[in-house]
Length: 583
Image 1 (cartoon, rainbow, N blue to C red):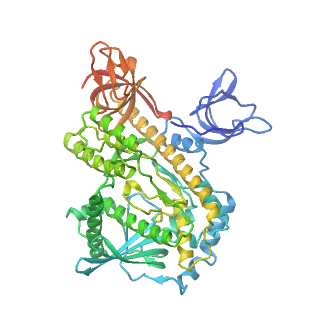
Image 2: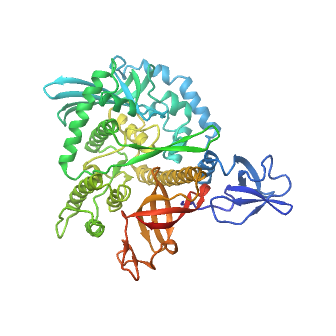
Image 3: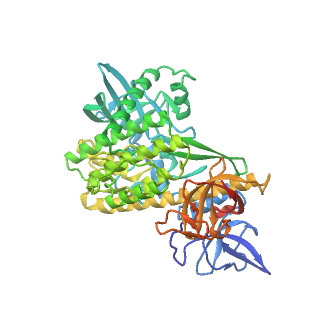
């Protein structure tokens, strides 16, 4: 679990404990000295509570009671506070959000002559079942002869967030919404993110619309509008997959546009695969259930389905069209950049996969960056097919492909997106939860002549760096939160039988031992080298396997293994294992 650097007066998440007659605060997530609490400094918090301790001229004191360390939801709240998330908005930000919603922005904009009225157009949203902020909506119609018109409607956040206001500054500071199981740290206050900006059904909403006419996968014409829409239905991925499977009936007025959108997305999918360079990486996202107390009681792994891919392909298409429009007009903005891989990294990837008995396609002896990108695209497809057919390595082999790539980031310079094989790409479709999308909206609307808040080129470098850093911080928090939830769920499972054995798969090796994914739920833990039976183990020179000194046996990622749990430290998301027998 990664930790942010701290200053001497930064609040610290602690657990209160008793040491003799003294009450002390012991840091929960970070190594550090106990903090003595003088007098009434603990307030109403009790021994055993998770608290936030702050410093001041009069010494340390409890500034907030968070909960109990044996309750998953309380620990998640503590984790977010520990990582610097505020969990509330400054009063001035909330006041501005309330002002722009109620005083003269929403209602006059509905009558704005420059805004296209699309309220009669059949429109729908598709999101996770528990989503609250709806950034995007879809409309579509069949034009015959292999042609279709698709509208991608995106929440017009900049109609509410003034370029010179405190909402803008707060959105820049946060950079992105942070999602953990059962909770969110939103980029914008709920009055905007869950209400005024959210494209909820059966109410008028302000949008920025990308209208595209396609022949097959080719975009023949594109237009951009500030618009007013009215969504007819709030649909979810499970529901749409049931429609596609014939288990549920599509309803009017969204049935026909859904069928058109499905056909367009399938055509786009086939065309992207034909490009060759685009990656194929199948993944799943864990989602947790909590009881009323806040304990994690179950986990579900949400696979990428056709419903997900439908929305993904249409959003990618809209992002590409906006990026191309801005690039051609040299409008200052932020592009989503994913540079082509280093050929040496691709060569190392092939060598590693071959050492793990994973088939790979032939690659040139010497590669240009573009050839390396093409090779990774083909490798990703071969690896995905191998995982599906062999039933081995689903949690590690696709990840190895991704690790060979450079990380995506935000930049004012258009360098293309290698992972999508897109020469121009930006993030436009999620302005409720990502600051770069707000920048892109401002650039697009200024170029269309419908808004004067044009981004300044001199500010884009800093904005891109800040947004990229915010994204990395959010990913760290989200990964740590998943570790915590899995650890709490494992503790719950072990209450029935602490000595139960689990079938697992090695997902990584280091000198100190092996990482293992185990159990139907997908738990993860660490198997220390000293706990691996049958030999003395050392990491090989290629760092792809633990080798037995006497037997010459190898323990490699993708290999089966049988484990038991040694120790669970749920608040810190740590699980230690020991090996029972070879798988």
